[in-house]
Amino acid sequence: MNKKEILDKIKSLAGLDNDEKAYLVNLVNTTKKYGLVWEDKPEDVEEELRTKLPILKEVKERAIINDTETKNHPNHILIEGDNLHALTSLTFTHEGLIDMIYIDPPYNTGNKDFIYNDSYVDKEDSYRHSKWLSFMNKRLEIAKRLLSDKGVIFISIDDNEVTNLILLCNEVFGENNHIATLPTIMNLKGNQDQFGFAGTHEYSLVYCKNKSLTNLNQLPIEEEELADWEEDELGLFKKGANLKSTGVNAPRNKRPNLFFPIYYNGETTYVTNDDKPIDISHIALYPITDGKEMSWRWSKKKFINEPHNIILSVNGNNISIYKKQRPEIGEIPSKKPKSFFYKPEYSSGNGTAQLKNVLGVKTFNNPKPLDLIMDFITIGLQKKGKILDFFAGSGTTLEAVLKTNNISNKQIEAIIVTNNENQIAEKVTYERNKRVIQGYIDSKGSKIQGLTKNNLRYYQCDFVERKPSLKNKKQLTQLATELLCIKEDCYNEITNQLLKATWHKLFTNGSNNFVYVIYDDFYIEDAVEALTTFITTKNKEAIFKVYVFSNGQYAYADEFEDIAANITLAALPDAIYKAYQNVLPKENKELIPQLDDDLNPETAS
Image (cartoon, rainbow, N blue to C red; front, side, top):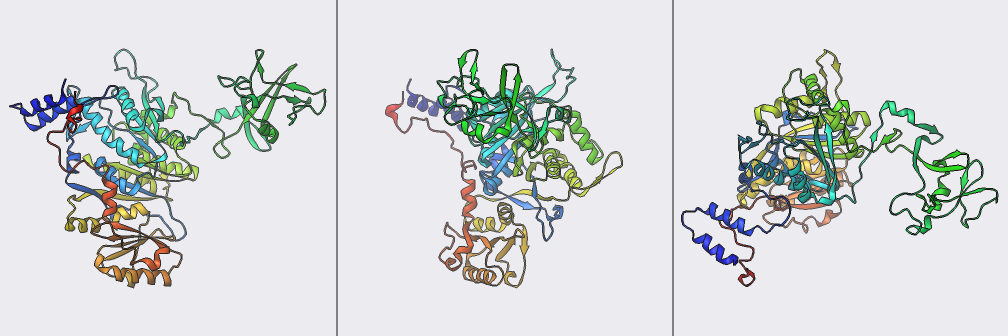
């Protein structure tokens, strides 16, 4: 079959418009042999990006700032707007910097939970799954860019789309980076309305950017499990694995260097470099299982260096050696999370009660319970880190971060994104977390102290024209200030005699880092003089990120040469264009796409 002849026939067909012809060409062009295939459906918010660039504008009156002269607290960010627009903006501020993502996307049940182009998608829509996959793919592709190389993503989902989502995530993140699909019990009694079986669970999908670099934490054990732990001079421990290896790599011939005698003197064990006992009466122990020579889990060096981490089990002539399992989270015993995810606190009813406890009334259907998200945070993040939730809904993720920071003395920063449908961003997401930070009266009338060691900043998505005319470039530079402050984590504007003019601004993080923005390249010489004066008279050790307007890519390095040691230069708005270029849709749609082999007709067949 000759593809070029088919293409010519399609182009010559009467009675079809260009979109219909493009559809037929795409069908012929599809060469995928295995994997997930869906109909790519146009999305209004994506079409908007063909002519406009998203930016973020701060709503300053909603900012909650608790910094002091001696302490800078985590800066949490709430973005009101469509998450595709917000994610695009974040590619400039946070590409490769997000340590963990948690999302609870629409489940596409057909029961008015998923809106596509301002209309609910119902069960009878023949493109229901294609619309959802197209919607999710656009956002997950950007989410992957935002994740750090060690980053991990948790996604809540149910039976309606779990199989499709697994295949989609396999394509976006790579099948090798699939960590777990966790059945997550949300209703232990079961939903009696479901056909055949009373549903008890949803799923939590866990993927990462690069499994070889990802390090997941364990969970603290429950109080009743403490009875299994003992304590020595080094702290808590319990009996761990037998130090004789098992599995396909355990035989001696696979690891000959790990086959050697361990001697037991009646009280303790020891090893020697020459494999000879200190006393011939001491008993030699070898890693032999059912008469087969195996290997030890530890090397000789480890046995010599860590006698304090060995447990001996002596029963007559049977002597076994185990390792002491130590806690991995500070001094708190911990355990690896199980692939079946359950705690009574994960009940979906808990999420509703927790939100009502803060706001006083029920304002949101089926919010996720705090304990579930807090456990994900414990598993996915270290003491410091950045977490993103771009389906923030009622704001559970941010409250979970606030409480985790308070309980565990962590410095985690959250970025959450939600639209403002029915004023959810203002009246629920923001109001909930404002109260948690500032304090509130709960549903029982008790006064709850605020978690004041946190800042919250509120932004709204806005736009500038995408066409790179000089006028539009200048406008983008003028309106990019909030993006620059977010990117550099410098929010405090410095105002003094040097900075009175409107063509430049200076921001700091309260420490030794500064952001200097030059909005008009006409004033380059004045900017050099002002910055030089500031450095020489105010702070010779200061580090500056200098953003300077340029109609091209030149950031005026020659002009700033004398203070080059203190500054890093970037041209605006070129830096923003470069960040956006890989995620924005093409400015103009191709009316009739070419066939794969069009440019080389000889290979078409």
